[in-house]
Length: 277
Image (cartoon, rainbow, N blue to C red; front, side, top):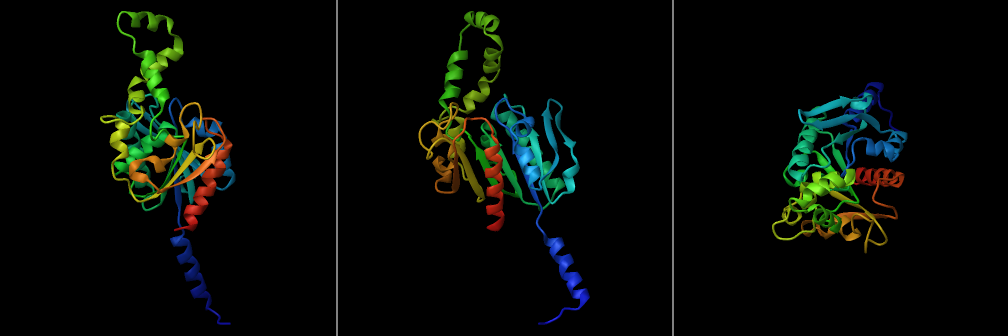
């Protein structure tokens, strides 16, 4: 057996360490969620148990986006969470996420990024990528996202489409749920089922970047209603005209909310995409 001089062994070890790949996760919450959604669901605990370190939260607000840093910024495997204006339309949330993604790429140049978007957050993330953001993004994982819209958005629009002066009565007696729905109307418009002139009709026909796509779908065998909010076919990115046949699919029997099972799916997907590169 050939023996290497100690100095060569040392240099080889240093080279391996220098070329070891660091990874970044960006967690994007959905409608009426926040960065806390990933904590309350147990997903961040699962990530941390497997060696992923919390690097911080990017908070979007009226004055711009600010980073609340955490200790794991320099870890080899780290995750950030975005905190977007979740009731705002795509024209507001997309620039916020674009800024956050650019900031992460500046902070961690050359490191591969995986974006994980829940519900409407998956659509926000996909839009950012289609518009050319995220040159270091290698994988997009969406969880229960309405890529082909949802009838629930249309129902909410109908419920809040009350003409004046009857709208005054609705504002007075409607309660908090009605107020939230009324204030979210612009986002609902973006999440209706695709038709000529709609946001999703435009988005779904555009060229998408050549990266890994993974659709986490609620329901059985990707058919029927996946959950109360988004049908299973809408959660599957393979049904997006520009992405046919390009997305892996994982089906989970769960409701619309994030669950610990999503954390297990995320880790499995990360291990597979890392092994394939």
